[in-house]
Image (cartoon, rainbow, N blue to C red; front, side, top):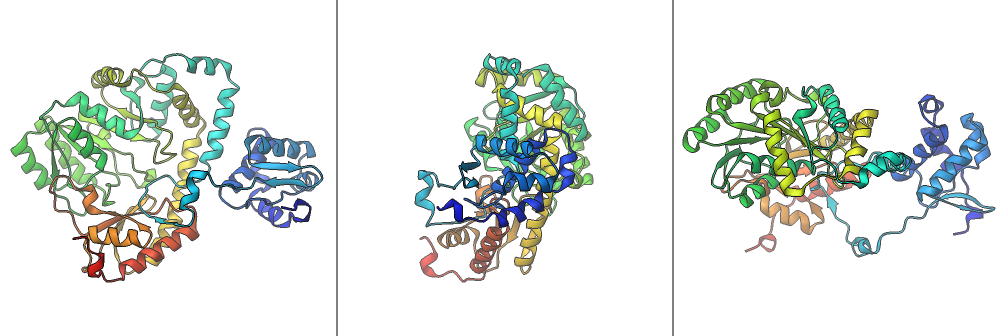
Length: 475
């Protein structure tokens, strides 16, 4: 690339759009605010690979800061590996080179409507800055090098409990326990509460990881009939009488996969049944949903018989495995012993990162940004899939689409994959021989941007309108 011939005009327009004067009124070093904003623009594709950044003097003049501030910002970006500087030519966005492991897939792109990952907002910048902050804190670094208590430090539990209070999960530090994500929290709870041969109840369609854990622990799982809200009271009452279960596992806020939500009245009925028969409720609140759209959690209605589980995997990143559970101090103590027997302790560096983000309000800021992003994505889906029967919670990650009558879900999943569209059929979530409906779960969050999402949904729409041929059926 001939850097001297590249004009910075397009980059300048982008930066003037995202770098308004108001952002400089926030707390923190100005050069870091500039660096973070530019880093976000690179991450989100607003500044393209090899784009030239404006000269430091011009950007400083427009932002009404010193040239030294912009110089430090550019150096910080270079340190992070976001840009490169060519003497006599300027500063450029670092060229994007695909990892060798990804090269084989470049020409075989697929539209991923299957993975329910947090959309890319500014997690990369948060992680970079968080690691820098800890790296500049020798006391914390030294602490993280040593074995940690399995329940983490009291200060970390306090920070989590304070944040949970703001989420209307009223608890004390002695009631919380960090875990390796939500799946680990579910496994830990079942290991503590159940023994081989015990019966557990759940929604007939549910998170596949729950079924897998029950199989390993040799638990009998019964999937309950569901309606537009979730588990029906008749199905729960009948199963309790017949099987005398120890545990009821539910995803009540945004059911995975059907995207339904239990009403407050239905929750009260379930609580009454569980209290009468001494059944522990495992409340899985891992799926992302804006707080304003949530019903009162089971933990708030009946804390004495509820284990509340959540995780930051869906709201932040699946790669940073930090989850937590909230329960009574007595049951938390039993779970502590189970956790210690399983893995002795948890990674202190990750826990410290998340606790700092909680204390600084970063997780809440990220949740607000994700809500805005998902609202736009739902609008796109509503426009493209307007002719189909869909259930969803606006702001959540998924849609539940009832297929046209000529399609069976498993056949459609295979047909769509042949046409480079990845979705998940209802059978993937069915417990045992539960009669799964002819429906698919669509995730709106994996697409890199809105254009890719539109392409993905239009490709899906084309598949939906197609008719299956004999060649498409696996015999």
